[in-house]
Amino acid sequence: MEHSVDLVPVLRRNGLVLSEAQCDLLEKYVELLMEWNQKVNLISRKDEDNVWAGHILHSLSPLLRVDLPERAQVLDLGSGGGLPGVPLAILCEGWSVVLLDSIQKKCAAVEDIILRLGLSERIHVVCGRAEEKGIVQKMGKTFDLVLARGVAPLVDLVRWSRPYLKNGGSGSVKEAVGGRYSVASPVLLAYKGGDLEAEIRAMQIKTQTGVAASVPLVFDGSEEMGLLEKKLIIIAP
Image 1: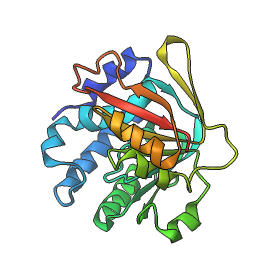
Image 2: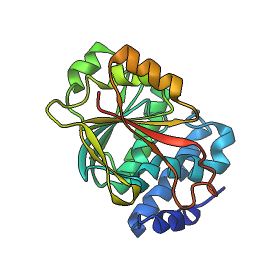
Image 3: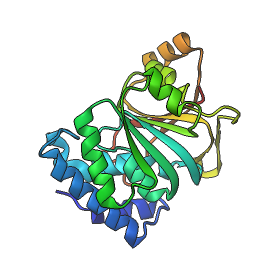
């Protein structure tokens, strides 16, 4: 299996320097993820040997291309084993993150992981579906960012995220110098891959919403780490 030492130089070459404490937390998170994956299918078994590049680096890769708010209330839709919410929360120490998933066994596993990481004060697990009325009533209009990694088509992600995003923000994206992007909340950040033309068109027609930015997750080292054709679709629903 890979190790965080394979990841750290790639992040550093792209301007993201991790503290020793952050490295330790990522290491422990992967250790606990692998421990629980023997009991509950948090990630595909075939991905276990590629967990650092395929899951941790992929989860963190928006930080290499996009300037996100330093302090934010964040909802991770369909979080599964805590991806991308947990790795991002480890690096974005001003974030408060809710991990939402509908599978009770996964939620119980991730609750244990968060407790053992010592992050339960700012990472919380909610078990249920995004469209459930009770969950919407409890958490609606409270989040700056909604994350979704490989969860559902964009049309569904827009419909599900709208009730949770705060009112009153600008919800915009600007391309800055050097190819980076600057985000003003509230926005949906959808991790996607491959040819998205038809999916984006269907989302635009059915939700009357446009894409604020389609950011290729390409950076120094992305190809060697196997992250090909990955994109971050940013939408202000």
